[in-house]
Length: 167
Image 1 (cartoon, helix red, strand yellow):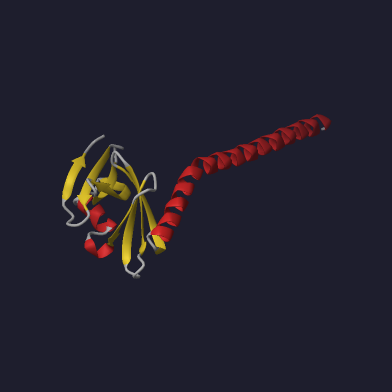
Image 2 (tube, helix red, strand yellow):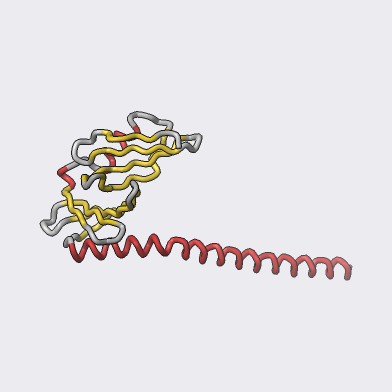
């Protein structure tokens, strides 16, 4: 009886140590994820602050990141006239280009154009960018077999400029 009690006590001690170790691992994982996301959060915060200050935007409700040789950050919100607009900001935060929503197609329309009825693909990212100083939607997609494809779509008329498949 005493041996069972001693064995049970040892098992409880091992269990306690295991639980403490798992809690420690969970805390470490959360800290690592938080540290990894910090640059992205800072970039988003800086972009939004610049657009609000210099482009007089308010009510920002979406943030996009795109990279087509050059990185651009863009936001959707309302311009100083209270009309829905996008602001596209260069990676170095030196240039801001503002375009009205009504001047082109929406991100949802760009997704539909990029998918072109293909149900085997899933949109992973949509970003407003500049190509030769003209606004374009860059739509990233993933297939069921994990192949990536991209579509570059003219913001103004919705025409597909380029498609890159099966990367």
